[in-house]
Each structure stands twice: as C-alpha cells, then as structure tokens.
Image (cartoon, rainbow, N blue to C red):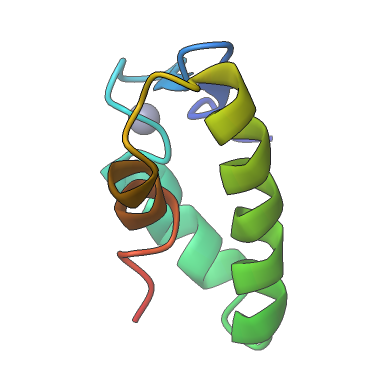
Length: 72
Ligand SMILES: [Zn+2]
C-alpha cells in the first residue's frame, strides 16, 4: 500500500501534500500498470469522475489534465 494516497475531498496526496496523483504516485501507477495501460486509463477515469464531483468548482479541463494528461 502506497503512502501517496489521495486525501478527499480535495484530492491532495497524503504522503507529500501535492495535488493527487502526485509525481511519486504517478510513477507507482505506471509501474503497477506497466502491462495494462488501458486498465490504468480506465482506473484514472473513475478517479477523475469522483474528483470532479468532489471538486465541482474546479475547471473540468484542469482536472482532466491532472488525472489523465500525464499518461504516456
Ligand atoms: Zn505524494
């Protein structure tokens, strides 16, 4: 279990207080899903969906960049 999990409802990292997924968690996710990039995209899509409800004030494009925009 990672120390870099999201703290809701602001979706900040519990490990380093950066906006989640932070750089460490992104790296972990890429490693965990190295053989299943599509599953990672689906997984992050469900986080994006939950986060956009928690942070309905945030611009959707910014949330999309944050949760999906860093995928290779
Ligand atoms: Zn972190």
